[in-house]
Amino acid sequence: MTKLTMIIDLSRCIGCWTCAVGCKAENDEPIGIWWNRILTNGGEEMDTPSGTYPDVSMSYMPINCQHCDNAPCVKVCPVGALVKREDGIVFLDWDRCIGCRYCLIACPYGIPSFNWSPPIQFPDNSQFKIGNPLVPVRPVGVAEKCTFCFQRVDAGNLTPACIEVCPAGARFFGDLDDPTSEVSRIIQTTPTIRLREELGTEPSVYYVPPRNTARPQEVQSD
Image 1 (cartoon, rainbow, N blue to C red):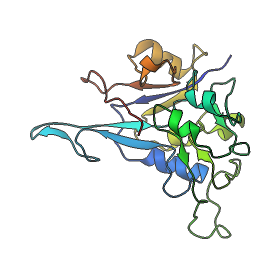
Image 2: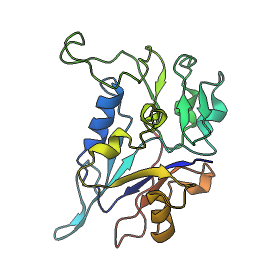
Image 3: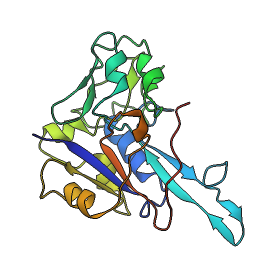
C-alpha cells in the first residue's frame, strides 16, 4: 500500500510564496488561480502581525488541496471527475469535469478554483513553453486544484514542485505507509496537526505547528 502524504513545518515557512510560484509554473495555472496559497496568521491584512509593538506575532499558513481520505469533493461530483487514487491523490479528470462547481461548494478548505479563462503565457507560447508537458492542458470552464504533482509521482519522482523550490525546507513529501520514509519519521517523532479534523475528512496534509504556539488559525472556506 502507498499513502502519499505532505508535511508542512510552519516554523520554517517564511511566507515567500516560492512554493506557490513554483506550483504555478509547473502546472501552467491561469492568472488569478493559485493551487498553492500562503495565508497570514496575524493581523487582518496579509503580512501584518497581530498585537502591539514590541509584543507582536505573525506566522504563515500554506494551504493547498488536503487530499482527504474521506473527500467531500469526491462525494458530490456528479460525473466522477474527482476520484481518490490508490496512492492517496485526489485526482481531477478535466476531460470529465462539466464545470458544475459542486466541489467548490463542498470543500471545507476553500481549495478548488474555477477557470473562467485559459492560461495567459508571457512570452508567447510559441517562443517559450510554460509548465510541465506531462500536465494536461485544461479546457476553459472546469475546476482546478493541487494534484500533488501526479505527473511527477507517476514518472517515479516523489518531489512535487512546491517542495523542490522551497528555500526554507519547510515541506516534506513521501509514503506514510513506508515506516522508513521521512514523513513517517516526522509523524512518529514530532507533534503534528491536520486542519479541521473534526469534520472527519482525514486530510493527507499534516502541519508541524509553530514553536511556542498552541495551534495555528484554522482555515475557513469562503
